[in-house]
Length: 118
Image 1 (cartoon, one colour):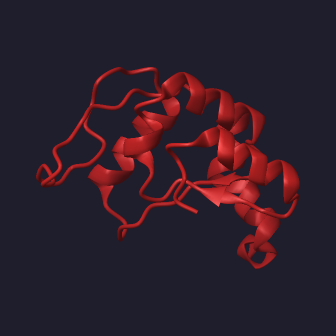
Image 2 (cartoon, rainbow, N blue to C red):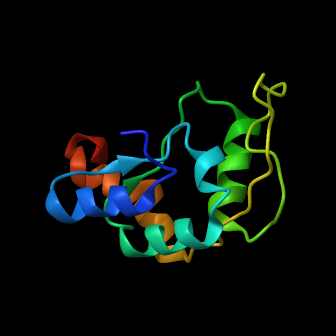
Image 3 (cartoon, rainbow, N blue to C red):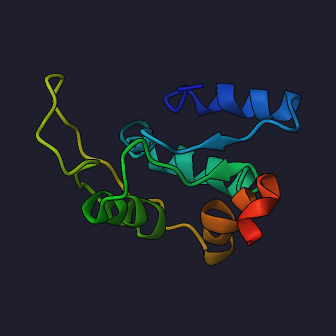
């Protein structure tokens, strides 16, 4: 895990391991610095990527995640908190299509955890 800076490596793992899935929790900083590669990765593997965060529900943090996934906005902060010690770079949105967003936000989780259907 935690190889968002090397999506070619993650793709090789997904190719070899058909039951392997990934989530985007705590990975916006890495993914958002490579928007073209990340977008291609999401389009190719949209049935194996899940929405996730590493924080409790927070409206401001979720808004950044939605902006990253849903828009083509450029140069925005990847987190609402104070700038960390290593500094903070800007990220760029992916502008994913609705069918990909539906899989990432909803249907992949329902496939993996059928009891979520209620």
